[in-house]
Length: 133
Length: 112
Image (cartoon, rainbow over all chains, first blue to last red; front, side, top):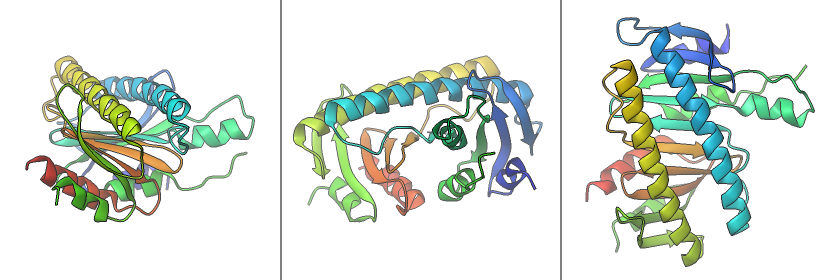
């Protein structure tokens, strides 16, 4: 079972998706096509890619100005909307970077309904270790 | 006792700050200097506004309801995460902290 399929088993999961660092949607699973479709996921992926970059800049700056550590690199970003949440992860990309790889895996994310959302479970799936080839 | 201070009783919560709409720190507690709490409050206010703008644009471009107004955000680093709900911001441990409970508590406290 792929990680996207695992994410779709989360309570309230509406969609799971993969996207490039530049935001283009690569692959997706959609539970409720009447509510969320590929074009919405594509825009959401672009928004998440932008936010990962901004959060990374902020974590970098924060560590420099405060001398605190542990914020950089940013592993996940979550937007909790009014009814829906999106959680995206770039953790595996970081693992590839640290291994000296130039070709990086995609970001991965899940959209969940807030009333059932389990953020800890989403992070647990997104942070499962995978071997770097 | 301050209402927000009770958030520090939750496992993994290291810092909690309450700020005004202009980002001015009203009160903050935890393992951080007062100066850094002021910075954190300003950052959280700016980040909240940015998230609001993003959610508004997402809703406008997609016609999908349910994203706005956003309730909060989480930026998760290697060992430290930052969570914001309304005019509250927390720094929590990335591993082991009961994030679901912390978010519920933040939402409840933000209504006081």
